Image (cartoon, rainbow, N blue to C red; front, side, top):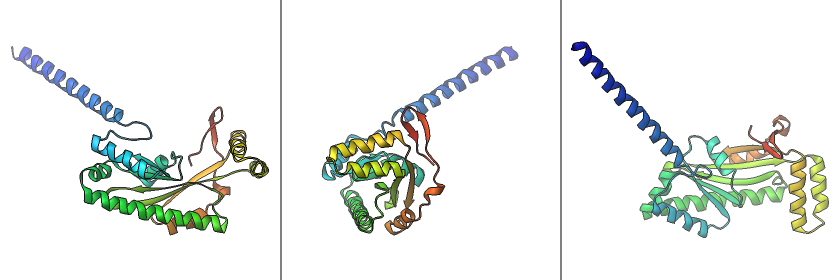
Length: 228
C-alpha cells in the first residue's frame, strides 16, 4: 500500500510539474507574441493614443516603442526608421507619459531638446561637408530620462558615387532611382555609432575608419547583412 501510495503521489507531482512547465512555456510564447513590428510591445489604449499623437505632432520623426537592454539593441531599432529622425521610447516610459501629464511634459521637453541638438549637428555636418556619409540620425529616451544619440553611416564605392553625381543633373526622382539601383548592384559599407551627447557623436562620426569596416555579406538576392 505504501508503494502504491508513493507511486500515486509521484504521478500527481509529475503531472503537476508537467502542467506547470506547459503553463510557463505558454506564458513565454504569449510574452513574445505581444511584441510586433520593429520590436514594439503591446501597449495600453492610452499609450497607443499618445503614440499616435506624437506621430502627428512630430511629422519628421519615426517613433518606435520597444524594451531594450543596450545601446546596440536600441541602435538596431532606430536604424529601421525612414524619416529625418528616429525616436525610440521604452514601454514603461510611454505608459507613464500616457497616465501622468507632468511625466509627459518632462519627456517631451527631453525629446525637443535632443532633436534640437541633432538638428544643429546635422547642420554642422552639412556645412563642413562631413554629412555625406550620414544615412540617418536618431535618439533613444529611456527610463529616468536617459538619452542616447545614434547615427547610421554608409559609404558608397567610387563607382557608385560617380554614377550618382552624374544623375544629379537629372530630375530628383530619377536620381533617387539611380541611387537605389547602384546600391543594389554594388554593396555599400554601413556602420553605426552611439553616444551620450551630440558632441561625442560628432567625434565618433568623424573618426570612423572605413578601411576597418568589413564588406557587407550578402544573404539572398539583393539583400545584405550590414551588421558589424
